[in-house]
Image 1: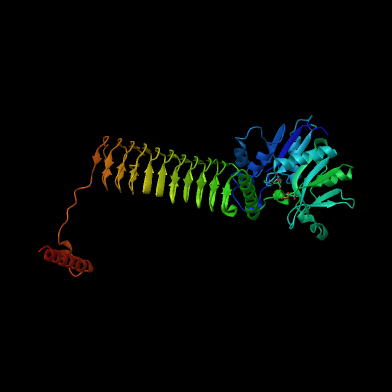
Image 2: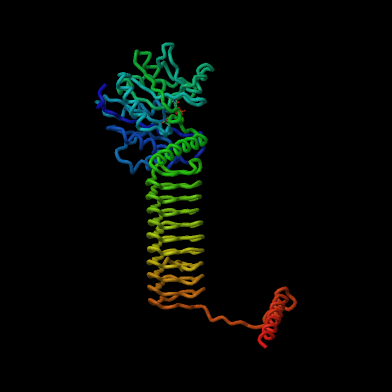
Length: 488
Ligand code: UD1
Ligand code: CA
């Protein structure tokens, strides 16, 4: 009953996940910024366990690879004997022989459990000095889950799987969440007696409950306060249900932290995101990965941010950004695309139909309309005219464009990199800048305009354009005549 009883956690992730119909192993499907298994591990790591073991078999190398960066996790390989009972048996055999603590078994496909729930389960288990304590939930539709069958006195007698259930048993609404705490010795002893005589020919972990009861052991069930946390993901319908439940939880958490989220139903926030107070999120917005957003920023509508850093008071509207840094008070969009390495300093602006990649845009500088800025360094107080294109790629390599402080460029410029436009310089409309522009110079590259009078009359006689030109000239002549009369 001591709280410092040694704890080992076993996470089951060896199953095939057939019902997902996916090349990706089921437990590696992501929701809310982590894989299903990642959520289970994230929760497990907040518990004081001395040992964390993940049981693998199907696609084991991919799952092991996904575990690589997570410290303190051991892998156990399941053999050809199928079933959750076999998975736990092998994990328990891999424990040190002297381990006498509790074993918490979690399923890699039950991603919504929170640490508090598991802590309470452990506490109940220890308080009752039970051999096993399982988490149960009462569902409107229990189809597919194992049912918790109780004796007349209400004590848990056994668990029966959907495929093995009689009609009466299938009508039971209390389900096994696939989450259990066992006393190690009781678990070892009863697993040794689990067979495969069932509809699926597998070693069911759930048989342990019946076997323990038959030998006088004590099994308790703790009902989840919110049945939704017990959701198990076996197919893609349940995957989207789990994602929605998780998202609703994350949205509520941030709302309580002081974030305005106008439309929770169309706002998706990964579990890995950090938001500050008084951030406002407008509808149809996805904030994903390691994104952080500082106080007072407004994001959306219709915006997607992945692994971005957004500064205080910035505004990002109808934009798509990945691995971008958006400075304090900066403004992005509508209809902007920020790719990896786009860095906007404080007060910078990236406007409508602008794409930015691997570029620094200095304090207060603006790229307001219809531009591509790639591999470019822009100083402070710069204004790029509409339609600026940095031609950064010569078909062989990428080159940089450097634009100094207070440079203002004309509309529709092409900057052929590598090229420098030094501080305070200006460029004319339509210029193609192939050579460096010295500080304070005006660069023009377009030939002076030449008007060839009467070209349309000569070459397009009889067209609507020729007729319109003729009308315009007559009107001009008449106006000139009237003017002459007035002058006399
Ligand atoms: C299991 C339970 C069921 C419970 C449900 C909760 C059993 C027999 N049934 O059913 O009572 O209501 O979870 O979600 O335990 N796994 C292995 N090795 C295997 C088979 C499965 O590691 O040989 C892993 C899977 O990868 C998965 C977990 O165990 O993470 C559960 O397996 P799954 O086949 O999904 O069991 P369910 O039919 O959902
Ligand atoms: Ca399952």
